[in-house]
Length: 293
Image (tube, rainbow, N blue to C red):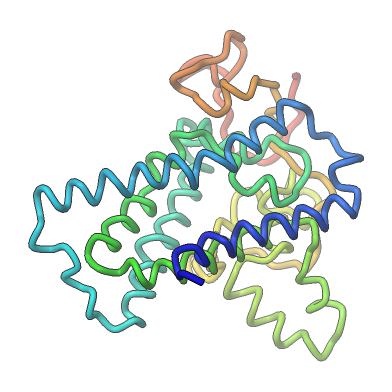
């Protein structure tokens, strides 16, 4: 099979398999997902890989070929190990900081908000973000630059591995439970949970409140690698899973407002999505408090 086709087929297959397993387990039959949530998830699932990412790649490669033609494929002979390291730092580590910024900056939070207001986990949560969140994501632009420099072949293998880990980290299959169940696997668990994102560590990030002793809404930001959280001091590992998810600011908004803010804004003056800056802006760095919907 062609490498490019295989690179796309792996995450699509993982998405379908995990989605089917979750459906069989009853996740989509007895949950709090609304029609609005389904719309957000399905649109996000389609637009990132088929519109936003390809558009960024086209723009970057066009700019490179127009203004810096001598640099095209200039690093194609670079050792594979260095190429992988380049993607881990310029894509995955920058995404860690982009994600972390969205939990400390109120404007950024408005773009990341769709990812957290849903009250369940599951593989469909993975891509829930405003279009502009991905459109401005440094890692995508930098990945395109690395491809222009000649690292496209390595990217065909790097991307499906990263997407598989991220999909598994959001999935209700909770594959890491087996590592915690058997004591002889605990040494393996110790290494795995500090290296890549797992359901336990990422579910904690989506938990409603740190008051439950498990959730860590303002930490565990890693996407492919969890080691960034370990290095930069935002890691929390409990080997448990929260029972409540979401964000305490639960003012309901239509899918079009959540996905296309700030180009489309809420008509509700009390909503943080009413304007770029409002008196009701949600501070994602503050832990849970009672909120009048």
